[in-house]
Image (tube, rainbow, N blue to C red; front, side, top):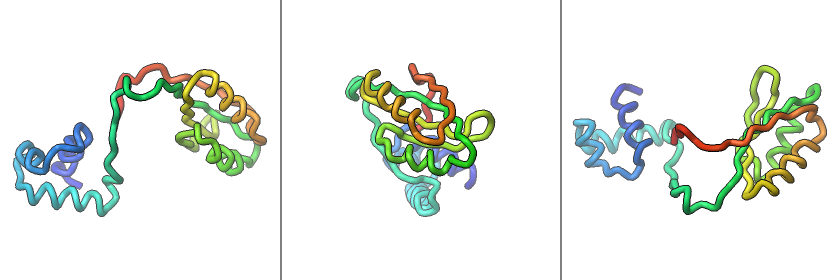
Length: 142
């Protein structure tokens, strides 16, 4: 990837619906160049897909949190596998340091979140958790 690819990605990250002509004009290259670059970035997997973002006031209110999980012994794969079964668990990360696994959880209410967290904590092999509810995004990379 070169500077043009990075500038193109930045423009697409800000507005993936921009026309090829608009992108070409801003980047000062031909439309064919922009189209070829986008195709190459998609084919190589750099661009994994395009998505739709909705205004927050159109989405139902949700509770989002990050839960850090300490796993007993060698139970990490079992715990991760169990977390995959929770529809409220959006993302699961392995990590280093005090916590072995980090789970991003999203529920439609505090009551539903409390129930999900209780069920997560009951998974065999989890020795400790610490949860932080996400309040507001100050910066979002899309």
